[in-house]
Length: 465
Image (cartoon, rainbow, N blue to C red; front, side, top):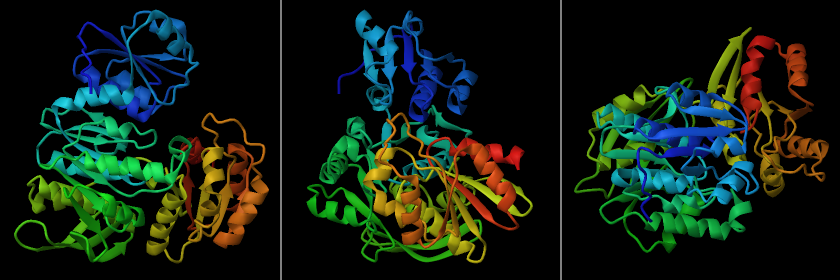
């Protein structure tokens, strides 16, 4: 990687600063003393956090926005015909992808990189929480807002950086690694990778980048990671999971409302086997036990004491949009969740059903991207088995062209058939409010799911029901 030379006199302009990754990097660089500004089509919580740090936010995209810029950082979501990007090329202003600038900034730190198709944001938050509680003051760049920080990024004075790495465009291969976690591998982002095999190969490259003095922690419960293990040339890794062959084996999970307890057997790590009992996690679900175990395994390898680790997990307050309780009204609880892939949806609903076996669960599902619905159609139709009812929203296109072949009625019928649940189709947010006003009775659990505007809809319900 070529070192990017940046002076404090430079004006660094972020195109697409409202994205969670872009805003986090912008805040880190501002805290380091750089002159940072940015633009985005819409303002949101991420841009608000930037403003609070003194970063100038320009709403909308315009040639004028880059007039005084000397370095450009661009989001991967920005299209090539973006008016600011075209002006940057005309003026020959140095331009870098977010991941290039991120790699440059954290190059002087010891880096813990967390990736995987699902669970990486929560796992990153758990690792950051433990290391912070050990008073190592890490730099943190996460893909979601950590409740205890009320932000997704923080510049620490310590030698460690805890970074969530997005595999969606292959850019995670550009980040320097000391330790890493791979939570799982799933059929995601095939629009970029073209084939699942290409995605697998990228994860192999990522794991093999971990140096001999570091370690990669891999989830042995994941069938695709099991296949990857057979192809690895490196032995610089440990495994974790419920699988009996895992180096860090989860035992005796106890799932309760609001928390989970479990034990951990540590085998073939160091000189002797260890048994850690009664680890308390203030999260529910098998998937969160796996996320926590990855964090425990890594932090134990950093030499942190189990007493500190257990205390940090016990007091972990979670990540925004990961089964976040929005409000409660007339004994009905309303939650907001980022799940937008079938595996994520299935995991969340299984977790809720396990701790609430008798309550009615209503899932408000907003599909994210026509391409995702198309490529994972059969997986989507069968992932809602643990919900009593689905309220199906229009597809949130995320900039994609409308797919005229998408048939919402056909999609709803397939979900009803293969998930064996009732499906109701709504037209928009107003339609959702009307339906819930008319049909909610008492004691239901209502979960909004998706990566688009559904989060805003769930919060708006508080004042509209």
